Length: 424
Ligand code: HEC
Ligand code: HEC
Ligand code: HEC
Ligand code: HEC
Ligand code: HEC
Ligand code: HEC
Image 1: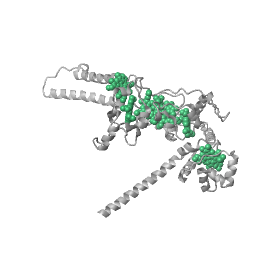
Image 2 (image 1 turned 30 degrees about the vertical axis):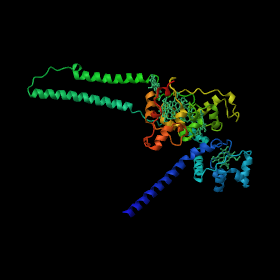
Image 3 (image 1 turned 45 degrees about the vertical axis):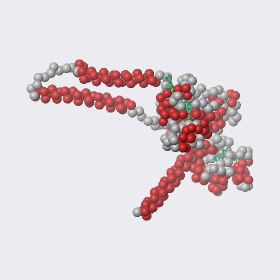
Image 4 (image 1 turned 120 degrees about the vertical axis):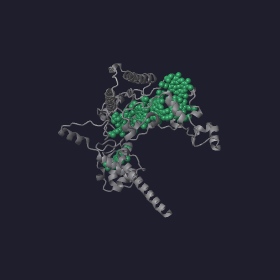
């Protein structure tokens, strides 16, 4: 028995190991694009020279693959080693130093190069499109099931009516056969059962919409305005894995998360002046968006023309009028750092999967019930959190066992449902 169990255990372990390795290589292969965009795209483009040379098929310029890896990890060392090609290249690019990437592994570099070589040349693509006569397809987009359910409900209602009618007729027939006197036929609009049914239906539907409308006054769940620049969170925070805090710095430290200024955008977009992502981007009405044209809009706000100068003058910029989506009434106090830093609540818990949204919409209804429910259910993160050293009593009770540490302390217990905590 024991022997069998040991064999089974070894089998399970090796299976787990196998799958972890398999999944890991797969993840790395998919990450070539994000690695490139996060580390290299500010200086390199596959097909155009930017701060650094175009990287398409760069392996062909480096006969020794090991040296290429070494260059990407630490180009300064390769130059110092006296490699003739590296030194020539360095001089040709006016001794602009490339960054060091000691953290990149060989498979990761392979993934980056594989991605670079998979990007089609826009000029060749444009020529091919011209000869073919163009003609793109705009597919994608999920379908809405509401209509389907509506039709199904209608059909079921009609079937129910017919069955009711059939039932009545059968009853009449059987009554006749048994010689019972036939009742005076009642037209269906005076039939009490029908009238009651219709009245109940009206009451339910009307009541539902009235109550919903009254509660929702001033609330904007699912609000999704069209922004002056089509800026996709999916492209930035999803595909390219830019951290939320890179742009919304305030969420960690302050009350407001803040919308980033043009400086933040231009950190990257001085170099990235076209959208070549494989992920097609769509507006809500399924019209495809031209990302390069949207970056051009960014340049108009920034007062920057890459064809005239490589230097950006921030004084020429005018601010982008982003349309505010989330807005609590003035009598409510809400603080981001309290939740993000002290409470360690993930952005997605309150804002939904922003990294999968092209255009942001309001995910939660921001009602008082929403805040309170979460405060009743959420545990306070006491462990290794300096902020909570002020709650000495709770710490003491948890440690001494006077309080059940598996249940923990809810936000409600530290006063998170007291009116004046949220209301001025
Ligand atoms: C700060 C800008 C910068 C960044 C970021 C950068 N590079 Fe470079 N890269 C350069 C420059 C400039 C050169 C040209 C040589 C020189 O001047 O050092 C170069 C050269 C290269 C070369 C040799 C090109 C050739 O023609 O042989 C490769 C390969 C390369 N970079 C890969 C990468 C990869 C991969 C990344 C990201 C992990 C990256 N670089 C990030 C600026 C950069
Ligand atoms: C590269 C910069 C950038 C990154 C990274 C980024 N955002 Fe944003 N975010 C913006 C800009 C610009 C807006 C305003 C335009 C809009 O609403 O789309 C915005 C708007 C928002 C809004 C709506 C604000 C309102 O008006 O109420 C939320 C919520 C938000 N971001 C959350 C996130 C989260 C969560 C992440 C990480 C998953 C994230 N953002 C990553 C730039 C960024
Ligand atoms: C950390 C770098 C970085 C920052 C900061 C950044 N972007 Fe981008 N942006 C990118 C990358 C990478 C792409 C995708 C390029 C590609 O795939 O060809 C992109 C693509 C875009 C596009 C085209 C796709 C789309 O989303 O419509 C627009 C427009 C854009 N960015 C606007 C902005 C604006 C506005 C800001 C400032 C709020 C900003 N970006 C900040 C890196 C950045
Ligand atoms: C506990 C829920 C919660 C969490 C967690 C949360 N937010 Fe918010 N967020 C809100 C609420 C509520 C508002 C509306 C605030 C207002 O109107 O004063 C908001 C507003 C915003 C706005 C609009 C600008 C502003 O500051 O009012 C941005 C941008 C934003 N959040 C980004 C983020 C990011 C990024 C994270 C994660 C680092 C995050 N939020 C985490 C609830 C949350
Ligand atoms: C997803 C869960 C969640 C939601 C939704 C949420 N909170 Fe919180 N809130 C927390 C957690 C966890 C803490 C504990 C962090 C702390 O005390 O530092 C907290 C703490 C607070 C505190 C401090 C309480 C105290 O006693 O110190 C205030 C004030 C607060 N939240 C206001 C709000 C408001 C207003 C809303 C709705 C607009 C809201 N919260 C929505 C999870 C949430
Ligand atoms: C965790 C935070 C929180 C606590 C605690 C809290 N409220 Fe609120 N309250 C809110 C939010 C958020 C709104 C705004 C709701 C909206 O816009 O629909 C609100 C709205 C209100 C309103 C306006 C009516 C409405 O629904 O818009 C009143 C009145 C109110 N609260 C009273 C109270 C009283 C009394 C208490 C104490 C028993 C209390 N609140 C505790 C978050 C809180």
